[in-house]
Image 1 (cartoon, helix red, strand yellow):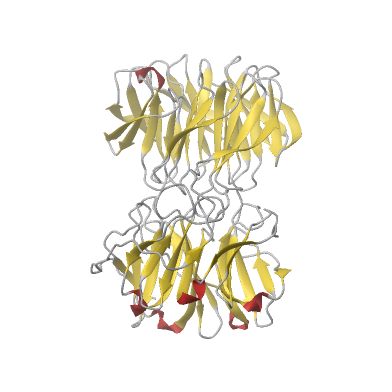
Image 2 (tube, rainbow, N blue to C red; image 1 turned 30 degrees about the horizontal axis):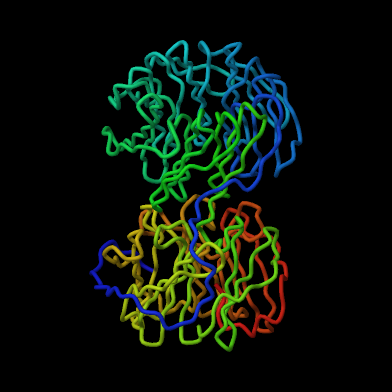
Length: 564
């Protein structure tokens, strides 16, 4: 399949009609929420997560220790320096770095042991790691400097202005950003400041980078609850944040949602391109924040009550807001069924979610297509009309909306997620000539101008959008050819593809393929496949474009005419 970068616009008609019966439980506002609270004790003030393993590290200022947490269980406590604050993890080496405020040092942890202690500047607080260079950057709040650590040695110290609390690194450009008390954002490349951006007249504190968009987010707690967005050398947006004055911050590169702790309001503020601008109640005195970009989980360390709040985003393929991706299936009589995932590779009791759906010749899960915080479904009827069924977050639907016509010209449709990298779910469509088109979602239930992104696709018998199957943080597409070979088309995050990779053969023995997301909750995207006998198999993704041993998870699924 060859890649193109230009295409023609396809006019899309909009209307509101309702003919297919759906099961509705009423509207709701699905925002991220606390799904678990981990009691760690002491005074937790810092947190970091290893996205490869899902291991969480939480610092305890009172005892001078770091708790190692797997799932919701503390598996180890490691003694570090005095008054430990923030933590950063290098996901490629699984090394954790801990700033020790009380003795001006950084503890380096491998496994469950401190393997080195490095002296840095005065009162170190923020810390960030470049996973490509294995370099750690430490913000010394009292010294007004950034210590650069390579291995176990400080290789340089960079002045960045007074009260430098936070630091962040863009792993794609290796650029480091350090906010300062003088309202400036210092830009560091190598071992020197290469630019200074005046952001505010108020003191800056927290900083985070979206590695997909290269947007930099900076908080100014004393500026009345403002969040500043910087791209390049300019402030491109200033936001007033719901829930109080934001302090510490993290960004999810997969959803582009920004999470901020509000210390005195005891809330986690959330803002994103999905239209969500809300505040989630967490524990007392939320200070530390860590985000798992693989599982889309945010962890908040609450200093005053000794807990960690676990916050999940429900807007991917989670139709009932229980923080697990679900399966939707249509039977031969047109009944639509929701199979809620139990989060461990199985299902809870199924729920009827509609009837009369046999008038639709194609169904696909669209993610949160209209930015209301719920997972949605797109359906094409026999006349080629495309319908949006907005999810209500309770396993049912709001009133459907027509979002297009003439879609019967397309021989295959797939909703792989945010292919274009703008934070909004998209649709890929193959026409009768084998041309592949990207229809970028506009975030409000419609489309931007379509773009041709490939041709020669008539040799492919099925397209599947599993999400990020290769583990690079960008949505991918799986394609089965006529000979039964399965191909991975890694997305490049900009509406195109990297080189296709053949990852399997013999897949023509499967009558249906589906991408359920992370079905078994191991942090990797999986594949569901139904064989000719009606058995359903899960192929657990390994996070590197392949899978572990498949497991049979059901039988009798040949009565279903569609699996989503």
